[in-house]
Length: 423
Image (tube, rainbow, N blue to C red; front, side, top):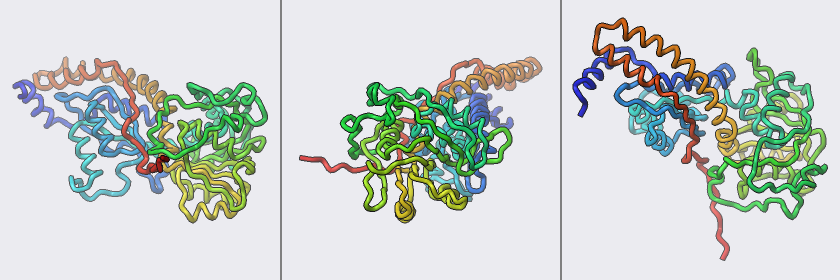
């Protein structure tokens, strides 16, 4: 039962203009600072604040954010149970125009439940793909072993034009692993990967997207290379940004070496699909130029052909259709696919979570100072108990300094692999 004061405050708040929770505003500001909406491909994408839940002083959310690739019912349950303020869903749950919001549609049902619980939803999608140091560079870091900071510095210094401007020097990798697979000798050799007898033996498993990605590993030596976006953007101040990445290694390496890097960088899954040309063996294929695209890569890779860049040896993506894969191997190229979202999910753990924690702290500190002053002045000037109670509710929310960012434990790619158990 609500107290008389709570009921009066609720009634009063219902006649006031709805506003976002202050912490949610700090989260949105942090995301826009890290991954500006101007970088998103608005020709098809739907990014930004997709669901803005109004602030409810009677049921204040925790100062916590949930990161996920896909916003499913299970992920929504997770956010509701923890009382999160916002969900950062990489893929937009609202992709096309809605003519209604009803409980008959499962995605609309999720949105309605979240709105009722006071949880907002933000989707960055292609802004993350394009940003320098974003998802495209993270995947490029995996195949090259180059730290993200080095990738950001080099990409920012290089031209956004298709012709690469600089070559990255070898560097120690930021990814750590509990038990490195590389021996000291192999880490410094011309073939800086585990010896054949030490290489991971890939076997199939259920839902590789749910592997623990907190202990990723690339303890192997970095490969000198050049990189540039496949589809450059023209956003001022974001030179080097764009969709996809092309990596040109200084020296070619065997395909199994690249596969090792991908496996280590994405949590060491027990198996993933590859396609190689008829009559070729993976161990015999030498790879120098790699085209990379998170998620579904066909449309982005097509831009390379339009430009006449035909010297691609390997396509690394989340998914490629049957016919697209056939066309690529007929041209002598190899294809590595991880299932769509498995090329994206590790980014949440490895990059976005620490990035967002730090940036929200900065935004939340600034917003708290600004809003406290404003609401204190409003409280001092008010002659209404209801207005005073409403301002007190905002001031109480602003008094909480905590910042939490969580990665969903229930988010996963819809596809898993069934394993035939041996007797």
